[in-house]
Length: 216
Image (tube, rainbow, N blue to C red; front, side):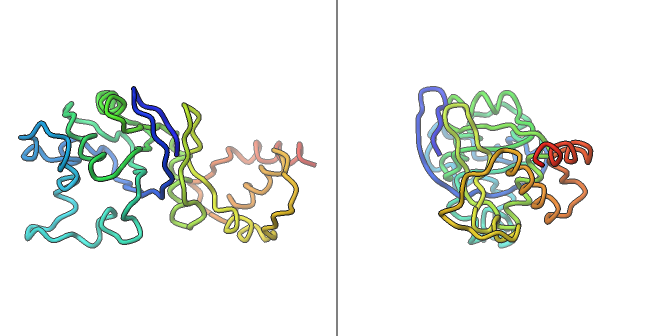
């Protein structure tokens, strides 16, 4: 991933973790009792503290950030209205110190977004259909990385071998680049494979028929 926030520039490649909770506020991101410091380092230990840890201080195995397959992920896909609540700058500090470099959501609170941009955390807003389909791709292991370059975001990177296997085509390095309409047809097949009524991510049935007609 390459991106620019304020005076910060970075490049990295990462998997991502999905935290579907909606209205995640800054007190849930980092509880107020951890705001006694003005240092940016060390706050990652307290990130989502009340969700990550049990009362005895042990990690909750069922929390997404504690699952082995999600450790090291630098992109957090959050639910709607992420970062609402108070204006504490410690929230992006905690995310960054934990290793999160970008947050994706259908809605990100304005003050949290501003604080994130100032501190080098990239906030990306996507529409609801995109986010739900994005989360579904993660679940199906059909996507694995996230790329962003200078205000042009590719919200997810498809695993081409898995995609070609899903639509019943060989993954050959000798295959010719497809046209946009052929790509739409293939993605329509993938849409059918997902089989979820809430994930009609290519639009209405009429729009799909129109795309199919154009591709003939």
